[in-house]
Structure formats: structure tokens, C-alpha cells
Image 1 (cartoon, rainbow, N blue to C red):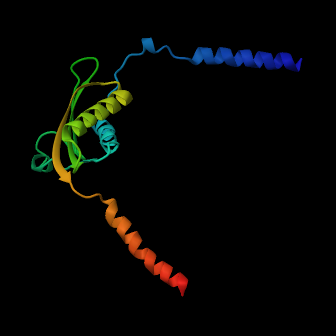
Image 2 (image 1 turned 180 degrees about the horizontal axis):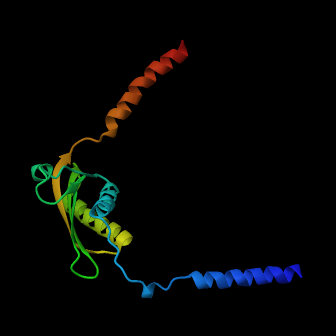
Image 3 (image 1 turned 30 degrees about the vertical axis):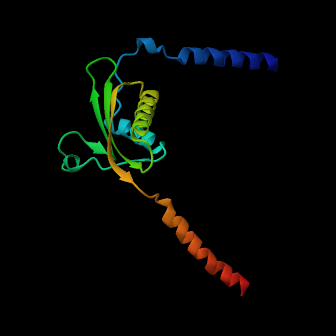
Length: 159
């Protein structure tokens, strides 16, 4: 008899879950994703590319003239159609020695893929502005500092 009660509970739970599912085709409303969220996705894509970092977009953006720029990314969102179209302006610094057309292509592809993957929006264009070339890695001074500390610690161990 206990087995019959368990079966009834299981079938009852299955019926309850079937009743609570929502048919999304009948839902009405729109989903809006903020430009700042899209900018954060673009920044994450920029940081994933080796030798690339977001750059300062320049004086006009610092004076708050025109569209808002967040960490080297400016988003233009047009919601004229059912699916919003996005234009992304990226301002980057590139490590010296990398071929700029290849880096820019990688930036365009990474930003487009990241935004389309997480938002479902259509990317109309990704503009890449190379604002700076960096000549040294930031990691080298840290490594040198660690190497300078090592001889002192080994000196103390010998004595």
C-alpha cells in the first residue's frame, strides 16, 4: 500500500509540474538590456585577447561630449526593429610586435561573438580604434622584484 502512495505522489508531482509550465509564445512584453551591460560584455571580450587592453577613448569622451564611453568601449543601440542592432566602438592599446590588422580582426570577432552569444542582439558593426602601442609587459617589474628578493632569502638560509 505504501508503494501505491509513492506512485500516486510521483504522478501527482508530474501533473503539478506540467500545470506550472508557461507557454512563452503567449507572453507579451519586451526585454531591454542596458548599454552598460553590453559594454561590460565587450570589455570582457577585449580582455580575452592576448596583447590587447582597453584604452582611453580621448578628450571628447572625457568631456562627456557624445555617447557615454566605459573603459574603452562605446555602445550605440538602435531599437527601431524587433531585434535591436548594436554598433560597438572599441578603443584599444596593442602590445608592440603584434600585427595590427590581425589584432583588430580578432577584436571584432571576439566582441561580436560575445555580445551575440549573451544578448541575442544583432551586431551591425564593431569599429576598432588603436589608440596606443605598449612596449613592455606590466608583469616584468613584478618578476624582477621577486628575483631581487630571492638572493636575500637564500643568504639568510646559508647563515
